[in-house]
Amino acid sequence: MKQYIVDAFTDELFKGNPAAVCVMDNRISDELMQNIAKENNLSETAFAIKVGDRYRLRWFTPKNEIDFCGHATLGTSFVIANYIEPDRKTIKLQHIRAR
Image (cartoon, rainbow, N blue to C red; front, side):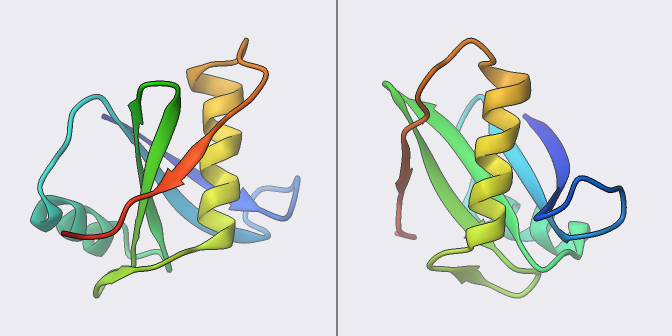
């Protein structure tokens, strides 16, 4: 798994709205995702895993899983487009709910 910190809505360091973005090679437990988000101590941490032609997303605050986070979703798209699959023309994201 690789983790990135992305400041959404800005092109300046230490401005905008920060979120952690974790791009996973393999699934990890809900408990581990929650502990990573707690350790990051940012408003949200997004977890993405590629399944087929799309990335499945989940979002965690330091306290619990949430249904959606816009700036963490934008941050995830930025990371995929610039670092994970820079030659890809379209990024498909899919929200998956907690079990």
